[in-house]
Length: 137
Image (cartoon, rainbow, N blue to C red):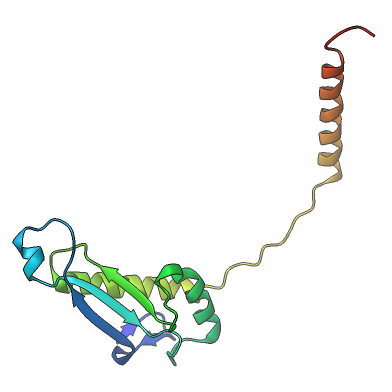
């Protein structure tokens, strides 16, 4: 079980791990051992996530969200399979934690009358400067 918050925890049956061979340097070891991990969380079908959290998670996951509604996280940073697995689980937990936070609603502010007046005055001054250039009329 992966504990996210006090209310939300992901059961082990909701997670699928697949170990794959990592790319990049590593000599013969990289060709023999499957150390990279692909963690798949079926978020759309998860009973532990409220609908609002699922919607925010979909937006936050971006390319990691599949058409089937799963979040796929790939980690191949370490040479150890166990370490990569822990990193993937922690990244998933962090992603879901971010999705649980409700963003603050932006309150649009108005431009003050004084600022509008200052802008117009500055434009007038600039206009007069430019008007003073060139030929006499």
